[in-house]
Image (tube, rainbow, N blue to C red; front, side, top):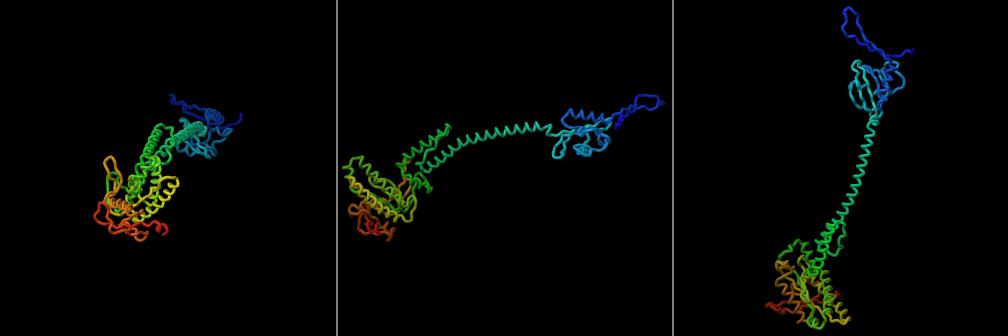
Length: 425
């Protein structure tokens, strides 16, 4: 029989005995090979390795190395060597260690009778890897689903927010009275579609309404921050009145559709000229117009702008009349009167109907100056107040100093604005 290292375990016999009898002990021998077989069987029952250590942490048996223990030594290699210091501190406990970059779960228990320690260790990945993979897979699945939900939410949000943003821009355009742009695109969201339809109806109504209200004037009032309710302030303005000579006879001898079409062309032309020179059409009076420079927006060169507008207006009307004669229609000879003075300008009228206009003696004088063209045989007359604002920048002819205006006692000096010299100058 080969010699093999073993361990003898003895305990005294504590049963009652005769004092003269010798001490008795109970002893048992076990080889380290048998202990190694036991530890390996114990390790095979689990997922890791085990070792049996003496009270001073010498190796009695271990399953992580082949063969049998031939002498009692402290563990010098492997995970078991790394466990020496934690075991010395912790005794019987469960803990984890890291060895060569891998985490191990450790369980240590003490055999009370001998003080030996049974230690088991297993890689954490072997025990919890499946759990980690399952959790990771679940998290990946959850993240994937969350990503899909987010993409669907973003797509749905774009389908909702994009039409809302277009509607907001459309509403802002309506607020600025910019009514000629495209209507918002259709939406599959019923509520948004209803809102888009309501805004489009509002825009259509305002497009029709602006034919009766000077939109540019409303924009100017809004830009100036002026109230759109009844209001008025004293301003110095230049006022122009126009009139078509012999219009009553023309209206009696021209079919209504032809006359309406001819007047439409005439007013389109005159309105474009007025706008080009910064004037504001206050109102249409039959076949004539009342135009303001200096209200609602103040203009430092209002007189000069008005006079240049009058010269351009006559040139444009002459060209229009040449085309009318060529087409066999009657011409629309135009007379113009201009005066400068103080007026009350603002939003005036009743509670249910307002208009931006100017009132005062200067308005009456401008109208009378225009009427003087008939008696004097001229086409453009300006008052002395307007002439002073023009200074020497435009050619004029002084007409009279004793001209009496209808409804006024004091004479008024007027000047004819010379078209030919102004055109060539």
